[in-house]
Length: 224
Image (cartoon, rainbow, N blue to C red):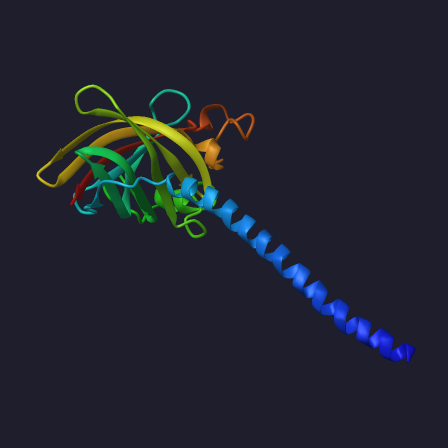
């Protein structure tokens, strides 16, 4: 008889527990949905919602690099890097965002030659470690209008898997469905762990020290 009563009691208690738990779970789920509803719109608004996409013309566009020795201008080197992909977002003839991908395997010298000791060294782990990091990117995060056709461009530059924010001035023109931009970005290569010949990583380099500053001159043409 006692066994029967205990079994009967279990049959009553278990359904009651289930009935009590369901509303609590439902209330928790609704609470999580409301939290998500309040978070998701703010994430979406971080991206530009207007503008037309202009695709970068890889033939008409170019990126030119320049590096020098630490003392004087003797021993400077310069060359080119090809654009792999790119696009700009233009709203009412104003640049609002964009992304450029550089193919680091295309590094060449000022004569567009790449089969020499200089370029082989630049591609090595001493400099850009191209085998491990074949692509560098620049993603525009903010554009501030200036006078005439000048703008101030801010974005994230990624080299060797390391990302830092950078800002530079550019000249921008949009006419007849074509966007043309020119600008020069100067960076401290040490921030991207490009160490070879840098006085920030090695002592007693003397005249063998290489300047940490690298200049990138850009000419970008993009079509709607």
